[in-house]
Image: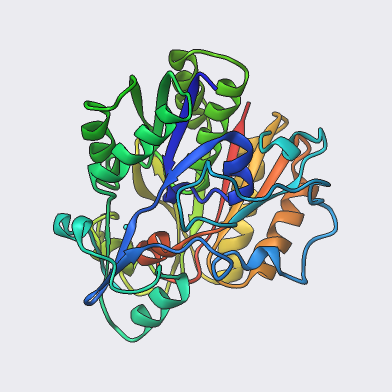
Length: 350
């Protein structure tokens, strides 16, 4: 492939999707006290692959892919295509209080990769969880590996620079890479980033040049909308990624916030009174934004897969233009910032 695609682990891409697109993933790091390690994206986070309560409407693709060398070590299944009427899914298309200390990026691993369960346990005990962007050396290694595999150029697509220092690390590494690197700020996170990365990979596999591959990622990201509900806004507020306002108390006992990504930042959209009301409103907002357009959807979640799968099934029935639906378990980094219980949807028009 003349153009290689690199991203970071906040994209919530599975081994299957990454391998199918030749996508290299550089993991972010989580810090729990004196324990620092890459976030785990293994089967402990990917409970959706084992869930018994899968909806009947969205169907899993008929073929699957084994992980390949396109992934960085330690990255395994996280998300999957639930419905892909055109069959294109078989090819993979279609950071308690969170803080980000720069010095954590170079800490040696003190334990195995950190899972969502690890983060949840610390948050529920009132402890602090930190996250750290990958060091430039991690990106340098990924770029060198892509070049050694035959890439003539690289497009590196990442979490919003307003939410993480990851883009800066990638840009520093790009300056000394063995081949030209285009670094793209997706201005989003989670499966919004993931869908933009898949668009870049599709353009690369179609033989497009680096400018077109970068444009494919940026264009898809600019058109999509990412909306999510939290049990409490306190974790995002403590980490400085959501503004504290009188209208949004840090406790989730009185309101359930619905948030969205706007101009690369996390912003309050509206509030619901109950968890059920928040989920119902998510469904309504997704349907209104999709309208009759052809769209891809991604349901991203923390907690029980059954709730997320049922939500995805309702979206599939309600939105007529759905081409693909992804079900994605969020990782430890996102959990550190949102806290347990997050449920969100990305609507990505073509």
